[in-house]
Image: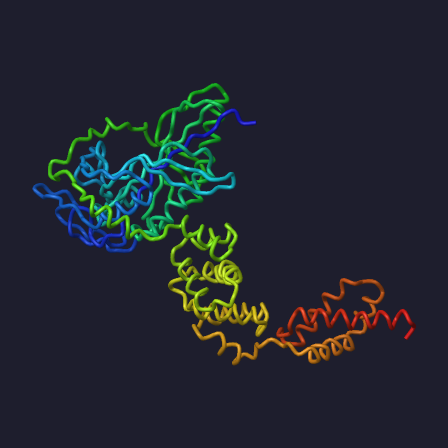
Length: 488
């Protein structure tokens, strides 16, 4: 039984989906593909004598997130200079917020395997992103395209007690950011980045242990692996009577270990003071009310509605609401064909269709399969116009071509064979052509019936109604058994 429990808080940095940077008019470009230093100016590179101007759209996106996280919005907040020296920080300081942030004291509720959890949100504040260092053998290059991009920092309280808590909190938060269209949430491009503060304490106590800050968590998988490693590392230190050192560590994905980077800074190390070039930020309460009214239905609300309205399982509803585009697609498909069970549409969507999307690396809103065509396909399977195997084939063709399911079924001759006599004729044909297997079945090897089933289905070109085929095959084999027993 473990003697210690982890205490974990997250700092989440999300690049906001504005067209221009936080304090200047430079366009926001893809820092992973754009020509280095192609979107920079005197302001975002910190030239002397330049003055920043606040991006109003960035404030609006930040307010959306803060309201979705149940935070208290400050009618007046202040930008500050966070002083530190690093090659990708051209001014020698970062414009951020500290003593008077935009929003505080919120929470996020989510479901885990152990029930509902509530994680408190300490603060939500705005700042500017730094540039990016590109390390080469023996030297480093600096790209300032990302410098000055609006960055939203969301800081949780240390309320998480397991890596499962952390993963579900992080995925839920990323989903909210995308629903609000405040951030792309693209972790591969660094649009959302996580840092975890973690300590261990004896079970049953309420104090906080010495914490480490874990950086370089650029995927959910890396985050879980890094925290599992750090929990085990600290547990071994404490179990052996040692003391954990307060420090910042980085996650080394290749070696699967955390690596010490520097001693953990405190707020006073950054020498915060109010940004003299920016006046206090005053938020009109009427603007906050308008944004609150315009908030979309959030993932947790949508999940509850999908369960109650469409009678989906919580697990299936979770899969559908994680991405807003998927949830919208599902609802359009259901509305297109109200006679088809929403559960059947959801099962095909989260099963066969998700597999195709994942294999192709395509988002659902980029797919050639319209929700209307998808609903028609599922309806054809449910009406037994085609069987499930043919349905999968049709879906693959729609995915490649965008053609309608009816045209594909007709052109490929995939309509399901539902004629009982035609199926019985095929059954009798297969039994006559495979006397050895029939003899094995009659001798007691009943599992051979599955092989015979497959042969009939092959003879039918995969189009036979499976239930009808199985019934007819069982009937024919039963007749043969009775004939064998009677000596016929």
